[in-house]
Amino acid sequence: MHIHPLITDSKSLAELCERLARSPFVAVDTEFMRENTYWPDLCLFQIGNREEAAAIDPKAEGLDLTPLLDLLVDNEDVLKVFHAGGQDIEIIYNLTGRTPHPLFDTQIAAMALGLGEQVGYSNLVESLLGKSLDKGARFTDWARRPLDARQIDYAIGDVTNLAELFPRMLEKLKRTGRGVWLDEEMERIADPSNYVTEPEDAWKRVRVPSRKPEVLGRLKALAAWREREAKGKNLPRGRIMKDETLADIAAHPPSSQEGLARVRGLSPGWKTNDIGARLMEALAGARPMPSDEMPAKEDKPGLGKEGALVADLLKLLLKIRSRESNVAPRLIARSDELELLAAGRRKGLQILEGWRFEQFGRDALDLVEGRLAFAIRNGKLVMTRTETEL
Image 1 (cartoon, rainbow, N blue to C red):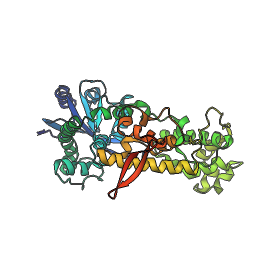
Image 2 (cartoon, rainbow, N blue to C red; image 1 turned 90 degrees about the horizontal axis):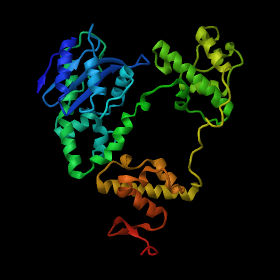
Image 3 (tube, rainbow, N blue to C red; image 1 turned 60 degrees about the horizontal axis):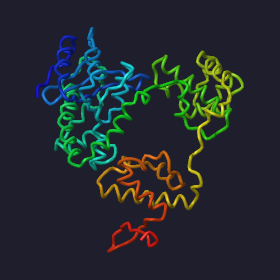
Image 4 (cartoon, rainbow, N blue to C red; image 1 turned 135 degrees about the vertical axis):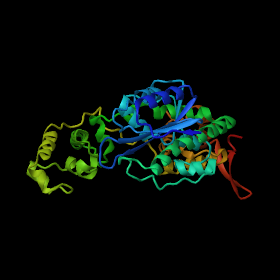
């Protein structure tokens, strides 16, 4: 494989992207800093295939990233391969307003191959390629210039290994017939709505015990205010105000700005500064949350103690079936779906559709409806048809 020097000029980048555009797939990774900013600070782009790989410096003066971004979001003929690519995809979305497509995430594929849930990149490389990675450069300052050789080698290694991993994983998926299982998951992470941050929806990320419309209305107004402040100042949300402080003010709003000085988590300066004044304006404009916006109560009708036991049995069945098929349980079913099935829900559940139904849902349905039972045979837990069913 040919490893290019760090790309800092538009001509070299355009030529690289022209060659990669003829490849069936490209491996993609980024390095960024986010500890002190709202928006991720993109510091390095890595891309490659089986023949060549390069690191690209997005901070290089005059560098035009257009050919790279076009390859990622416009070229439907090239598959884009990531590992745990959520934040990489978010960066691309922030730059273009679109997401890479089609894409393949090796962390999700690892679940279908029995390699564990949320398997780390280094563990995956070690498991499939037998390589031990140098993790020393992982937590370096990627924004510092110039980057040293060790940083660049580490960064490019991520895509060279990914380009080697992907064909092996694809072959395993073809042999097991599980590639189709992943189509829905890959489309889900490619959905642009995952990466949109609308201030009016920011309240949904904050936990608050109250379900009073007045409290939730204030929470919505405050969370939207904090989101705009964080974006405008390019600071992490928590640097503006912690979630627990936000929830506390929503539940117990001060009657005046002076009262902010008594709120735990805020400095005395809030009683007179401009940001405190803007917070109070947001509170003053808050309205009780309309009924059609109220969060739904936990949709577990009639679960009760008996239903909870049935849900536990479903989780045991999931553990057995996932072990038998060597698939991560999380890929097959979520706990909330098992609880809904135990509570009587039959519509709108992924486990009752497609491959999930064949692998698990049919037996799960038989279990809750009395056609299947657990039994012990020769010291082993097995599933058996009930006498009524027989």
